[in-house]
Amino acid sequence: MLRSLYSGISGLRAHQTMLDVTGNNIANVNTAGFKASSTQFQDTLSQMTQGASGPQAETGGTNPAQIGLGVRVAGVSTNFAQGSSQSTGRVTDMMISGDGFFVTSKGGQQLFTRAGAFSPDASGQLVSPDGGVLQGWTADQSGVVNTGGPVGSLALNANNLVPAASTTAVSVDGNLPSEGGTLERVVKVHDATGAERNLTLTFTGAGSNWNVSALDENGATGTATLGFAAGKLASGGSLTVGGINVNLADVSAFAGTTSLAVSGQNGSAAGKLESYTLGSDGSLIGSFSNGAKQVLAKIALANFTNPAGLEKSGGSSYVATANSGGVQLGGAGDAGIGSLTSGSLEMSNVDLSQEFTNLIVAQRGFQANARIITTSDEVLQELGNLKR
Image (cartoon, rainbow, N blue to C red; front, side, top):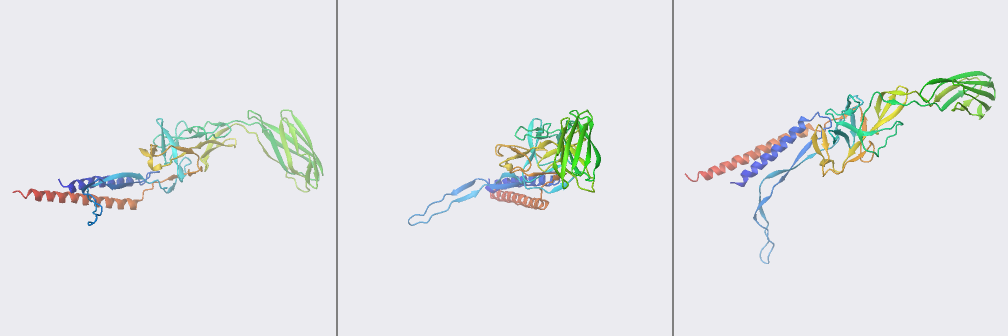
Protein backbone atom coordinates (compact mmCIF):
# COMPACT_ATOMS: atom_id res chain seq x y z
CA MET A 1 0.00 0.00 0.00
CA LEU A 2 1.03 3.60 -0.49
CA ARG A 3 2.70 5.30 2.47
CA SER A 4 0.63 8.43 1.79
CA LEU A 5 -2.56 6.48 2.56
CA TYR A 6 -1.43 5.79 6.13
CA SER A 7 -0.02 9.31 6.52
CA GLY A 8 -3.47 10.63 5.65
CA ILE A 9 -5.07 8.33 8.23
CA SER A 10 -2.69 9.55 10.94
CA GLY A 11 -3.52 13.14 9.96
CA LEU A 12 -7.26 12.44 10.29
CA ARG A 13 -6.74 10.99 13.77
CA ALA A 14 -4.53 13.87 14.93
CA HIS A 15 -6.88 16.58 13.65
CA GLN A 16 -9.86 14.76 15.14
CA THR A 17 -8.11 14.98 18.51
CA MET A 18 -7.53 18.70 17.92
CA LEU A 19 -11.25 19.11 17.19
CA ASP A 20 -12.10 17.21 20.39
CA VAL A 21 -9.85 19.42 22.52
CA THR A 22 -11.11 22.62 20.91
CA GLY A 23 -14.73 21.52 21.29
CA ASN A 24 -14.19 20.82 24.98
CA ASN A 25 -12.66 24.28 25.45
CA ILE A 26 -15.65 25.98 23.82
CA ALA A 27 -18.09 23.85 25.84
CA ASN A 28 -16.45 25.13 29.06
CA VAL A 29 -16.31 28.80 28.09
CA ASN A 30 -18.53 29.65 31.10
CA THR A 31 -17.13 27.11 33.57
CA ALA A 32 -15.66 28.87 36.62
CA GLY A 33 -11.96 28.11 37.10
CA PHE A 34 -11.67 26.14 33.84
CA LYS A 35 -8.29 26.16 32.10
CA ALA A 36 -8.14 25.75 28.32
CA SER A 37 -6.08 23.01 26.69
CA SER A 38 -4.14 22.98 23.44
CA THR A 39 -2.93 20.18 21.16
CA GLN A 40 0.67 19.75 20.04
CA PHE A 41 1.53 17.66 16.95
CA GLN A 42 4.81 16.03 15.97
CA ASP A 43 5.85 13.89 13.05
CA THR A 44 6.32 10.13 13.41
CA LEU A 45 9.36 8.08 12.47
CA SER A 46 10.63 8.61 8.91
CA GLN A 47 11.64 5.80 6.55
CA MET A 48 15.26 6.02 5.39
CA THR A 49 15.66 5.60 1.62
CA GLN A 50 19.24 6.82 1.41
CA GLY A 51 21.77 7.32 4.14
CA ALA A 52 24.15 10.23 4.47
CA SER A 53 27.78 9.93 3.34
CA GLY A 54 30.78 12.09 4.02
CA PRO A 55 32.87 13.83 1.37
CA GLN A 56 35.66 11.80 -0.22
CA ALA A 57 38.80 12.83 -2.02
CA GLU A 58 37.10 13.19 -5.38
CA THR A 59 33.42 12.95 -4.37
CA GLY A 60 31.21 15.30 -2.34
CA GLY A 61 29.08 14.16 0.56
CA THR A 62 25.40 13.29 0.23
CA ASN A 63 22.51 14.06 2.54
CA PRO A 64 20.12 11.48 3.90
CA ALA A 65 16.83 10.95 2.07
CA GLN A 66 13.84 10.14 4.28
CA ILE A 67 10.12 9.83 3.74
CA GLY A 68 7.83 10.72 6.62
CA LEU A 69 5.20 8.28 7.80
CA GLY A 70 2.63 10.71 9.19
CA VAL A 71 1.77 12.77 12.26
CA ARG A 72 0.82 12.04 15.83
CA VAL A 73 -0.42 13.96 18.88
CA ALA A 74 2.62 14.71 21.01
CA GLY A 75 0.60 16.01 23.95
CA VAL A 76 -2.33 18.04 25.22
CA SER A 77 -1.15 20.86 27.48
CA THR A 78 -3.19 22.99 29.90
CA ASN A 79 -2.98 26.78 29.91
CA PHE A 80 -2.97 27.98 33.54
CA ALA A 81 -3.12 31.70 32.70
CA GLN A 82 -5.31 33.79 35.01
CA GLY A 83 -8.99 34.00 34.07
CA SER A 84 -11.08 37.15 34.40
CA SER A 85 -12.96 38.04 37.58
CA GLN A 86 -16.72 37.88 38.01
CA SER A 87 -18.26 39.55 41.05
CA THR A 88 -20.94 37.52 42.85
CA GLY A 89 -21.27 39.25 46.21
CA ARG A 90 -21.32 35.90 48.07
CA VAL A 91 -18.83 35.73 50.96
CA THR A 92 -18.11 32.06 50.31
CA ASP A 93 -17.25 32.64 46.63
CA MET A 94 -13.48 33.05 46.45
CA MET A 95 -10.98 33.83 43.73
CA ILE A 96 -7.22 33.26 43.70
CA SER A 97 -5.25 36.11 42.16
CA GLY A 98 -1.96 34.61 41.03
CA ASP A 99 -0.70 31.06 41.33
CA GLY A 100 -2.11 28.42 43.63
CA PHE A 101 -5.05 26.04 44.02
CA PHE A 102 -7.76 25.46 46.59
CA VAL A 103 -7.39 22.12 48.37
CA THR A 104 -10.48 19.93 48.71
CA SER A 105 -11.13 16.43 49.97
CA LYS A 106 -13.67 14.09 48.40
CA GLY A 107 -14.02 10.42 49.21
CA GLY A 108 -10.68 10.49 51.02
CA GLN A 109 -8.84 11.83 47.96
CA GLN A 110 -7.06 15.17 47.98
CA LEU A 111 -8.02 17.34 45.02
CA PHE A 112 -6.93 20.76 43.77
CA THR A 113 -9.08 23.34 42.00
CA ARG A 114 -9.20 26.96 40.87
CA ALA A 115 -13.00 27.06 41.09
CA GLY A 116 -13.84 28.89 44.32
CA ALA A 117 -17.64 28.48 44.43
CA PHE A 118 -18.07 27.11 47.96
CA SER A 119 -21.11 27.03 50.20
CA PRO A 120 -21.88 25.63 53.67
CA ASP A 121 -23.52 22.22 54.00
CA ALA A 122 -25.76 20.97 56.81
CA SER A 123 -22.77 20.47 59.13
CA GLY A 124 -21.27 23.88 58.40
CA GLN A 125 -18.49 22.57 56.16
CA LEU A 126 -17.53 24.66 53.12
CA VAL A 127 -18.04 22.44 50.09
CA SER A 128 -17.72 22.75 46.31
CA PRO A 129 -20.76 22.10 44.08
CA ASP A 130 -19.74 18.44 43.66
CA GLY A 131 -19.26 17.86 47.41
CA GLY A 132 -15.52 18.42 47.82
CA VAL A 133 -14.79 19.75 51.33
CA LEU A 134 -12.52 22.81 51.50
CA GLN A 135 -9.32 22.17 53.44
CA GLY A 136 -7.37 24.43 55.77
CA TRP A 137 -6.34 24.94 59.39
CA THR A 138 -8.87 25.47 62.21
CA ALA A 139 -7.98 28.01 64.89
CA ASP A 140 -7.90 27.17 68.59
CA GLN A 141 -10.21 28.86 71.11
CA SER A 142 -7.94 31.87 71.35
CA GLY A 143 -7.97 32.41 67.55
CA VAL A 144 -4.42 31.15 66.90
CA VAL A 145 -3.89 29.14 63.68
CA ASN A 146 -1.07 26.60 63.44
CA THR A 147 -0.25 26.52 59.72
CA GLY A 148 2.53 24.02 60.37
CA GLY A 149 0.06 21.30 61.25
CA PRO A 150 -1.91 19.00 58.92
CA VAL A 151 -4.83 20.44 56.96
CA GLY A 152 -8.39 19.38 57.67
CA SER A 153 -11.97 20.14 56.71
CA LEU A 154 -13.16 23.66 57.49
CA ALA A 155 -16.50 23.94 59.30
CA LEU A 156 -18.25 27.18 60.30
CA ASN A 157 -20.87 26.06 62.80
CA ALA A 158 -23.46 28.70 63.68
CA ASN A 159 -23.38 27.35 67.28
CA ASN A 160 -19.71 28.23 67.69
CA LEU A 161 -19.16 30.31 70.82
CA VAL A 162 -16.34 32.60 71.81
CA PRO A 163 -15.77 32.04 75.56
CA ALA A 164 -16.60 34.66 78.14
CA ALA A 165 -13.71 36.77 79.43
CA SER A 166 -13.53 38.28 82.90
CA THR A 167 -12.72 41.98 83.19
CA THR A 168 -9.21 42.67 84.40
CA ALA A 169 -8.72 46.20 83.07
CA VAL A 170 -10.83 49.34 82.69
CA SER A 171 -9.71 52.55 80.97
CA VAL A 172 -10.96 56.05 81.77
CA ASP A 173 -10.07 59.22 79.89
CA GLY A 174 -11.37 62.74 79.38
CA ASN A 175 -11.30 65.94 81.43
CA LEU A 176 -12.26 66.78 85.02
CA PRO A 177 -13.35 70.41 85.54
CA SER A 178 -10.71 72.23 87.57
CA GLU A 179 -13.54 74.24 89.16
CA GLY A 180 -14.30 71.13 91.22
CA GLY A 181 -17.31 68.95 91.96
CA THR A 182 -18.34 65.32 92.16
CA LEU A 183 -18.65 63.07 89.11
CA GLU A 184 -19.79 59.47 88.97
CA ARG A 185 -19.21 56.99 86.18
CA VAL A 186 -20.58 53.44 86.00
CA VAL A 187 -19.04 50.73 83.83
CA LYS A 188 -20.36 47.22 83.14
CA VAL A 189 -17.74 44.57 83.95
CA HIS A 190 -17.86 40.77 83.62
CA ASP A 191 -16.87 37.79 85.70
CA ALA A 192 -15.39 34.54 84.33
CA THR A 193 -18.83 33.24 83.35
CA GLY A 194 -19.69 36.42 81.44
CA ALA A 195 -22.18 37.70 84.04
CA GLU A 196 -22.39 41.48 84.19
CA ARG A 197 -22.08 43.67 87.27
CA ASN A 198 -21.60 47.40 87.88
CA LEU A 199 -18.36 49.07 88.84
CA THR A 200 -18.94 52.62 90.08
CA LEU A 201 -16.18 55.24 89.96
CA THR A 202 -16.67 58.46 91.96
CA PHE A 203 -14.41 61.49 91.35
CA THR A 204 -14.39 64.23 94.03
CA GLY A 205 -12.14 67.27 94.19
CA ALA A 206 -11.14 70.58 92.73
CA GLY A 207 -8.11 72.18 91.12
CA SER A 208 -5.01 70.02 91.28
CA ASN A 209 -6.26 67.36 93.72
CA TRP A 210 -8.95 64.77 93.05
CA ASN A 211 -9.91 61.67 95.00
CA VAL A 212 -11.21 58.61 93.22
CA SER A 213 -13.19 55.86 94.93
CA ALA A 214 -14.27 52.64 93.24
CA LEU A 215 -17.07 50.35 94.37
CA ASP A 216 -17.55 46.97 92.75
CA GLU A 217 -21.06 45.53 92.93
CA ASN A 218 -19.61 42.42 94.58
CA GLY A 219 -18.43 44.60 97.53
CA ALA A 220 -14.79 45.26 96.61
CA THR A 221 -13.51 48.83 96.96
CA GLY A 222 -10.47 50.84 95.94
CA THR A 223 -9.21 54.41 96.17
CA ALA A 224 -6.64 56.64 94.51
CA THR A 225 -5.54 60.29 94.60
CA LEU A 226 -4.88 62.16 91.37
CA GLY A 227 -2.51 65.12 91.37
CA PHE A 228 -2.53 67.60 88.46
CA ALA A 229 -0.05 70.29 87.43
CA ALA A 230 -1.27 72.88 84.93
CA GLY A 231 -4.17 70.54 84.07
CA LYS A 232 -1.96 67.53 83.30
CA LEU A 233 -1.76 64.43 85.45
CA ALA A 234 1.32 64.53 87.68
CA SER A 235 0.67 61.73 90.18
CA GLY A 236 -1.68 58.83 90.68
CA GLY A 237 -2.94 57.37 87.46
CA SER A 238 -4.42 54.01 88.46
CA LEU A 239 -6.26 52.07 91.12
CA THR A 240 -7.15 48.45 91.73
CA VAL A 241 -10.51 47.18 92.87
CA GLY A 242 -11.43 43.51 93.17
CA GLY A 243 -8.65 42.39 90.83
CA ILE A 244 -9.55 45.00 88.17
CA ASN A 245 -6.96 47.63 87.27
CA VAL A 246 -8.49 51.01 86.44
CA ASN A 247 -6.21 53.06 84.18
CA LEU A 248 -6.56 56.83 84.79
CA ALA A 249 -3.38 57.94 83.03
CA ASP A 250 -5.29 59.80 80.28
CA VAL A 251 -7.39 61.95 82.64
CA SER A 252 -6.78 65.73 82.67
CA ALA A 253 -8.10 68.64 84.76
CA PHE A 254 -8.53 71.80 82.70
CA ALA A 255 -11.10 74.48 83.37
CA GLY A 256 -14.47 74.79 81.68
CA THR A 257 -14.78 71.27 80.26
CA THR A 258 -16.26 68.05 81.58
CA SER A 259 -15.66 65.07 79.29
CA LEU A 260 -14.77 62.28 81.68
CA ALA A 261 -15.80 58.90 80.23
CA VAL A 262 -15.08 55.20 80.46
CA SER A 263 -13.21 54.38 77.23
CA GLY A 264 -13.22 50.60 77.52
CA GLN A 265 -12.95 47.36 79.46
CA ASN A 266 -11.52 44.01 78.37
CA GLY A 267 -14.23 41.64 79.64
CA SER A 268 -17.09 40.15 77.65
CA ALA A 269 -19.94 37.70 77.83
CA ALA A 270 -19.89 34.54 75.72
CA GLY A 271 -20.72 35.30 72.10
CA LYS A 272 -22.45 33.29 69.37
CA LEU A 273 -21.17 33.34 65.79
CA GLU A 274 -23.29 35.70 63.66
CA SER A 275 -21.28 36.17 60.45
CA TYR A 276 -17.80 35.86 59.02
CA THR A 277 -15.57 37.59 56.51
CA LEU A 278 -12.54 36.52 54.49
CA GLY A 279 -9.20 38.26 54.94
CA SER A 280 -6.72 38.69 52.10
CA ASP A 281 -4.45 36.13 53.80
CA GLY A 282 -7.19 33.49 53.68
CA SER A 283 -8.25 33.88 57.31
CA LEU A 284 -11.95 33.40 58.06
CA ILE A 285 -12.78 36.01 60.70
CA GLY A 286 -15.95 35.47 62.75
CA SER A 287 -18.11 38.25 64.17
CA PHE A 288 -19.83 37.25 67.42
CA SER A 289 -22.92 38.52 69.20
CA ASN A 290 -20.82 40.05 72.01
CA GLY A 291 -18.99 42.27 69.52
CA ALA A 292 -15.83 40.18 69.48
CA LYS A 293 -14.00 39.34 66.25
CA GLN A 294 -11.81 36.27 66.13
CA VAL A 295 -10.04 34.15 63.54
CA LEU A 296 -11.92 30.88 63.05
CA ALA A 297 -9.75 29.18 60.43
CA LYS A 298 -7.34 29.77 57.58
CA ILE A 299 -7.81 28.42 54.07
CA ALA A 300 -4.94 26.32 52.71
CA LEU A 301 -3.67 26.94 49.18
CA ALA A 302 -1.44 24.60 47.21
CA ASN A 303 1.18 25.07 44.51
CA PHE A 304 3.32 22.75 42.41
CA THR A 305 6.70 22.92 40.72
CA ASN A 306 5.03 21.91 37.45
CA PRO A 307 1.28 22.71 37.45
CA ALA A 308 1.06 21.51 33.82
CA GLY A 309 1.79 18.03 35.15
CA LEU A 310 -1.51 17.89 37.06
CA GLU A 311 -4.15 15.46 35.87
CA LYS A 312 -7.74 16.58 35.36
CA SER A 313 -10.14 14.48 37.44
CA GLY A 314 -13.48 16.10 36.57
CA GLY A 315 -15.48 18.65 38.52
CA SER A 316 -12.93 21.37 37.61
CA SER A 317 -10.45 19.57 39.87
CA TYR A 318 -6.96 18.12 39.46
CA VAL A 319 -4.90 15.44 41.15
CA ALA A 320 -1.13 15.39 41.59
CA THR A 321 0.98 13.17 39.36
CA ALA A 322 4.59 12.01 39.29
CA ASN A 323 5.47 14.92 36.98
CA SER A 324 3.63 17.69 38.82
CA GLY A 325 6.00 17.57 41.77
CA GLY A 326 4.97 17.34 45.41
CA VAL A 327 2.24 19.58 46.76
CA GLN A 328 3.46 22.72 48.54
CA LEU A 329 0.90 23.96 51.06
CA GLY A 330 0.73 27.51 52.37
CA GLY A 331 -1.51 30.47 52.99
CA ALA A 332 -2.57 33.28 50.69
CA GLY A 333 0.25 35.77 50.23
CA ASP A 334 3.03 33.25 50.90
CA ALA A 335 5.87 33.08 48.38
CA GLY A 336 4.70 31.52 45.13
CA ILE A 337 1.04 31.56 46.19
CA GLY A 338 -1.47 34.20 45.16
CA SER A 339 -3.86 36.26 47.26
CA LEU A 340 -7.55 35.59 47.91
CA THR A 341 -10.52 37.79 47.06
CA SER A 342 -13.94 37.18 48.57
CA GLY A 343 -17.18 37.72 46.67
CA SER A 344 -15.70 36.93 43.24
CA LEU A 345 -15.07 33.91 41.04
CA GLU A 346 -12.37 33.26 38.46
CA MET A 347 -13.98 32.66 35.09
CA SER A 348 -12.78 30.32 32.34
CA ASN A 349 -9.65 31.49 30.50
CA VAL A 350 -10.96 30.18 27.16
CA ASP A 351 -10.40 32.70 24.33
CA LEU A 352 -13.31 32.18 21.95
CA SER A 353 -11.66 33.99 19.06
CA GLN A 354 -8.64 31.70 19.32
CA GLU A 355 -10.79 28.59 19.70
CA PHE A 356 -12.93 29.36 16.64
CA THR A 357 -9.73 29.93 14.67
CA ASN A 358 -8.47 26.56 15.91
CA LEU A 359 -11.74 25.00 14.71
CA ILE A 360 -11.13 26.32 11.22
CA VAL A 361 -7.50 25.13 11.24
CA ALA A 362 -8.51 21.67 12.48
CA GLN A 363 -11.32 21.40 9.94
CA ARG A 364 -9.09 22.37 7.04
CA GLY A 365 -6.38 20.03 8.25
CA PHE A 366 -8.91 17.20 8.44
CA GLN A 367 -10.15 17.99 4.91
CA ALA A 368 -6.61 18.09 3.53
CA ASN A 369 -5.75 14.71 5.05
CA ALA A 370 -8.99 13.24 3.75
CA ARG A 371 -7.94 14.51 0.30
CA ILE A 372 -4.64 12.60 0.70
CA ILE A 373 -6.61 9.39 1.21
CA THR A 374 -8.89 9.96 -1.80
CA THR A 375 -5.91 10.86 -3.99
CA SER A 376 -4.02 7.74 -2.86
CA ASP A 377 -7.12 5.69 -3.60
CA GLU A 378 -7.27 7.12 -7.12
CA VAL A 379 -3.60 6.17 -7.65
CA LEU A 380 -4.31 2.61 -6.47
CA GLN A 381 -7.28 2.50 -8.83
CA GLU A 382 -5.07 3.52 -11.72
CA LEU A 383 -2.66 0.72 -10.80
CA GLY A 384 -5.55 -1.73 -10.78
CA ASN A 385 -6.63 -0.53 -14.22
CA LEU A 386 -3.25 -1.46 -15.71
CA LYS A 387 -4.49 -5.05 -15.89
CA ARG A 388 -7.68 -5.28 -17.88
